Image 1 (spheres, rainbow, N blue to C red):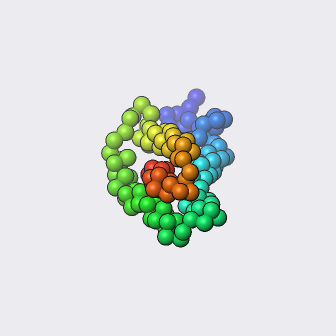
Image 2: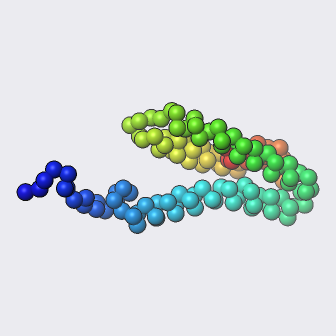
Image 3: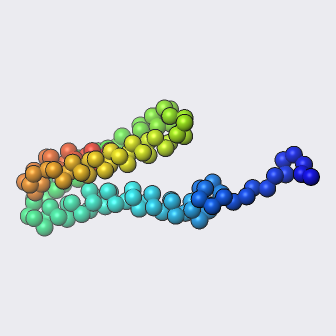
Length: 131
């Protein structure tokens, strides 16, 4: 017979709250998924533009535009903490909407005609990806 409050926690496979290994794997996957878009927009696209003889000023302008959303992250945190959809948890809706928005913005980035000569369009889409 057990006394109240002495129940043992049983590790359930596939549950993040009880599986440290699954938490580390999930954290690593999310961290990698976060880094890929940043790597593409901050490093790969400017390098590709430089290889295609785009001026340093144009590449600098592109980078200046895509880092602007990082200035607003300070204000986005309190907004995310204030509003939530409780059936999904406090932050899960923001993560889901963010991932869907990221995929859609990358897909729409592929629709830019001649991105080497359309730095403005590329900058706008880079801004949206960084947001």
